[in-house]
Each structure stands twice: as C-alpha cells, then as structure tokens.
Amino acid sequence: MVEQKRRILVANWKMNYGPLNSGRIAAEFKAALNHLKRTDVWVAPGAESLSVVSNALKGSDILVGSQNIGWVEKGAFTGELSVSSARECGATFAIVGHSERRHLCGESNELVGLKAAFSLSQRLVTVFCVGETLAERSANSTSLVLKRQLSVLTSEHRHLWSEYLIVAYEPVWAIGTGKVASPADITGAVRVIQEVLSNGPAVKLIYGGSVTGANLSEILCVDGVCGALVGGASLSLQTFEPLVRCAESLT
Ligand code: PGA
Image (tube, rainbow, N blue to C red; front, side, top):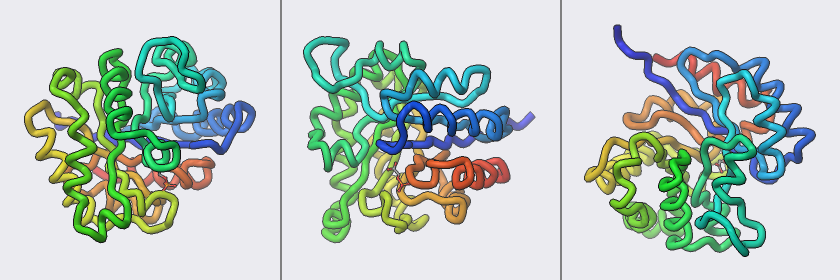
C-alpha cells in the first residue's frame, strides 16, 4: 500500500487571544478539524493559553505548541518560557526564531541557535523559522541569509533532526503583508535549505507568509514543502478551515 502523504498546518495565533478566546476557538477547531485523513493541525496560542487550549483539544489529534521557548532549563530569565513549563501545559512543539522574535524582539541568530539547540536536546519538536527581509531579498542575499540562519543548527543534534526538527521558510516581506512568495521563490529557498542540511537526515520543510485558502495548494505543490505556518488566516475556524480542506484534497 502506498503511504498517504501528510501535510502539517501550524496555526500561529501570535499575541491575539487570551485564554477565553483561545479555548473557544480551540473547541471549534476540535469539533470541525479532528480525525483528518492527510493533514496534521498544530496550534500555537499565547503562553498563557497553552493549558486551556490543550484541555480544549483533549481527545483530538490536534497538537499544541508554544510560540517561543527558553534556552536553558530554569532560572532567572524573566518573561521566558521553559521547555518543562511548556510541556506541563501540554505543548509538544515550539516555534523558534520566528521573524517577529528576531526583528521585533531583537533575538540574535546566536540566541535563536541556543533556543533551537536546547529545544532539540529536550526532544521538543522545534519549528525553526528562517527567512530574508525585503532589503536582503533586493540585495540578492536570500541564500546568504538562509545559510547564516541555518548555520546555528549544529551537528551535535543532527541525529534528532528527522524526528524533531521542522524548518519553516518564512520570508519576512511575506508575513502579514498579503504578498505570498511565488512557487519559484519557495523552490529556490527550499534548495538552499536542503543543501545546507544535506549532511544530516531529511528534514521536513514548511512555508509561512500570507498563506490563505486561495494560495495554499500552489504552495503545497512545491517540491519539498510539506506544510504551512499560518498567522492571519489561522485566527478563526472560518478562515482556517478552507486551508485544511485544501490540504485534505491534495494527494
Ligand atoms: P501570516 O503570518 O500568515 O499572517 O503572514 C505567518 C507567520 O508569521 O507565521
């Protein structure tokens, strides 16, 4: 029997909902999006809503994860979320190095590397985000930027990559702008990422940046892309369900 190809759709709710709304929308997701044939739905609510969302999703196969993660186990790190606290709240994955963390919160490449290393070492599935800004793209530096961002994934954790690492290509200029990268742009980035990581086991790749029900199918048809990281369109069942139906309809 030929194994069905599964896609991953990660809903990143960013700083939009507290526990009340997160729990309510998670319950709607559970009712409508459970037991899918070809799609894995993952939800990343705010840290304060992880417990509520994981409770709301109990009994479903939708996974819960955090939008950020600390780079050491515990201690005096005001405002950070530790792997064990996230786990205690039901998280099974963490987004690391999202462009908003890098560019709006000042997380350096080195810090993102430490976060990814710690998350991987703790066997937490790590959605590692990379992507160039518009200025970097205009300067033809996309490939250089991706290589620099990926360089922090050290060989120490290579044996964990196939099971615990997902790389999300998220061009900064496409996030929240309505300007989705073209299949050619995504193909180019996928090639660079695969080349840089070619010394390890195959790593799953997803795309993020203005993904909607209208453009998802062409994104998922790009060779090497097995899912999407979705911000705006993931904020309600009404806008997210078309993405899930699209992923379900593809072979
Ligand atoms: P967007 O966000 O879908 O609103 O562009 C994607 C992301 O930031 O992960």
